[in-house]
Length: 284
Image (tube, rainbow, N blue to C red; front, side, top):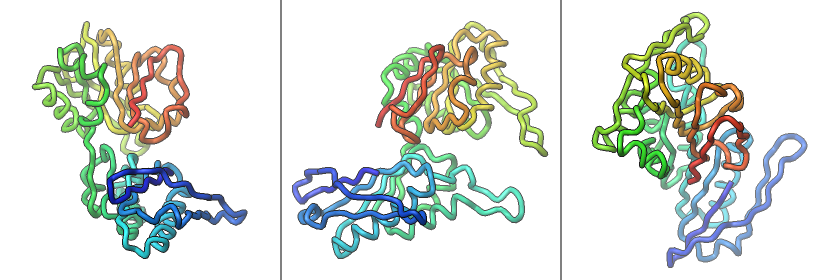
């Protein structure tokens, strides 16, 4: 967790703090009151990729409000919004995870909350005073992709209906120069397994870019890349905002040539590379 202090002149500095976990699992954090004497705004940047970090964030906000007598605005930047994929109750008895997490964030009363490329419109609608930085803006920070898309050197592939709007926005950013092709996946309703993937367009002889928000284990992109390669795509690239890659990059070997992602879920130095895949981290 990075905590920045802004003074009245607009200068910012990083706040040091002590933190540790007690043997019982409780999170502890302590700031120095002296470091906040001329603070008019505080910004907290955190990757909430495990539950202990959520508790630590809550403890940090409480400590900072006590030091500043609740007179200082606190902003939060959480690039990856946890539970965003649990944005509906599919089976009776489940929790609505996105709402639970949004309620926790809202209870901390931040003056502003910034997230990156929300999985759907549900999470931004649930979070108070939120700014959602769209995928197209994040992609704009990658010079290589910008150059290739601007001249039509890449054909955009929307992996499913849910990604269609975002994929079209990327094409629109480049005045419609990149061609857009829709893909479609069919799942077994009982198991959730992908049983068929279709590409609704001609990719033969083309360099293609699949764009989506989250890659966890990667099954959607593996199955899609197989079809793209079989149908004659020369080069398959993947742009993912939130690269979890829980199965590693080896699962994409021989199928996906280039992977572009941000450091929203983990710092760049924590990604494990693969010698056959060109991995580029867009650091924010």
